[in-house]
Image 1: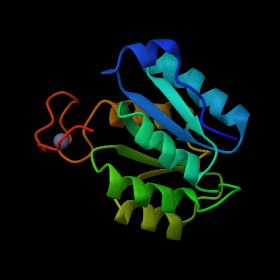
Image 2 (image 1 turned 90 degrees about the vertical axis):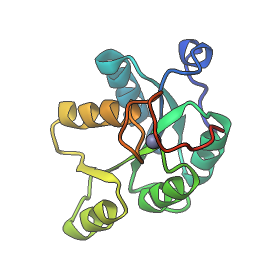
Image 3 (image 1 turned 30 degrees about the vertical axis):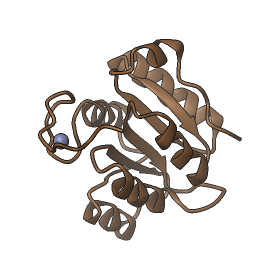
Length: 154
Ligand SMILES: [Zn+2]
């Protein structure tokens, strides 16, 4: 399964934030896509595994936040993916989701600077976090467009 195209609106408005959602279940991808559009008018790009996610990250500079399911069926898990994202694009926000969240996983995620949520946490809390991260630089925490990191834009 490849990466899905962003909605036409997101593609046109290159400065609009875009969320990359990495999850192998199509129904889960649809739910998040719908919620982000409704709650904060943010578009999504989708990938089902680590490799397609990295490909999408390189293809869409507008991605400002990566939301990854920990338990991916193919390839490295979501934690490995977010570690890689932090290395490649440190200004991009990172959220780890898991239906099997435990203390160790939470600790690893926090230590690496990723936000992490158990999927049983209230959906509005998770969505609000993603919306906030998508609109801010993950390095300096400034709103997008006012980033003070001086990172060259890809
Ligand atoms: Zn910054």
